[in-house]
Length: 189
Image 1 (cartoon, rainbow, N blue to C red):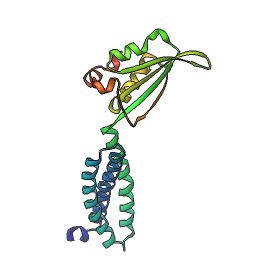
Image 2 (tube, rainbow, N blue to C red):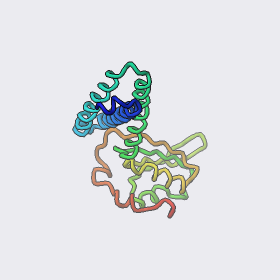
Image 3 (cartoon, one colour):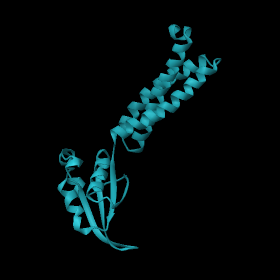
Image 4 (cartoon, rainbow, N blue to C red):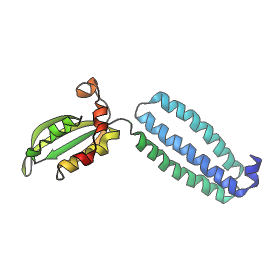
């Protein structure tokens, strides 16, 4: 630590990097907790607290320099972004995608089922007449792929996606056909 304390640039870098690591852990742990991964969240929190104590110690021992406080705050901000990016890549959980289309001829439910998605569809009535509404449950990691697929098949479809919190019964209990979902390329549609 004396090498870091002796060099003001190393001190700034250390404070910044430690706080990025701390807040990244904090963000990921919070998301894991909200998604119900309690044991993984507990393990991440252990690492988070260790990093926090080291980082806070560095800042508290060097509060006389304003740039150290700025490095701490900047590290906090960057850590939130990094944590959110990690969560995006992990894509934990499921999304429900609701699709509304006026184009029955495309037979969108069958096309999506053939690609491995579980689709529930039913007729609905909107301002401009009869519509076909589909409800599709997909792992979050396939949400963007599903959205691209829908856009390629029916660019005028109205699509809403939201996070599914609790699942019970139906197609997904029997097993997700992830291999089939991974296998197709949206450019081939």
